[in-house]
Image (cartoon, rainbow, N blue to C red; front, top):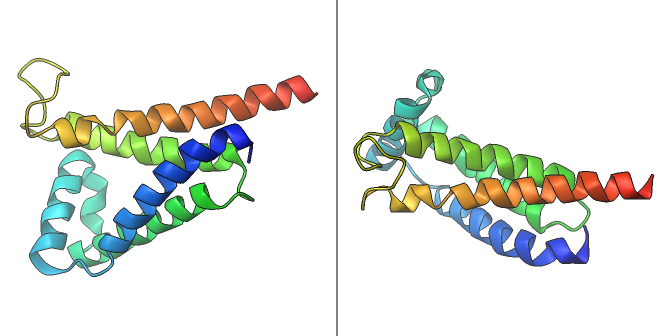
Length: 139
């Protein structure tokens, strides 16, 4: 990991790891609500039971958070994971009714929490692109 990537990776990694840790015990209505929202954006997630989905999401967040925090994980790999994760959240924002103002990409009051996740995509792409351009300069 480049030293210049450390602040970005530490801040986002700690946040995502904490989010995953907080979802470890989700069950019942909480898991069903999260699952229902996710299925609305990505129908293929219907194949998972809500409790199973919550556990898988928790583990995925913990793994991504840990990868971002671990200095031995290349920024290219950590950035690719962060970009994919962020893109999923942006898809959730775009496809969930009520998250955006009518006929606009601008978030509604309810959508601000999800709309901000576009920053995760930007941060992930920054790690990926910097890794690729840094690698090219070395060759």
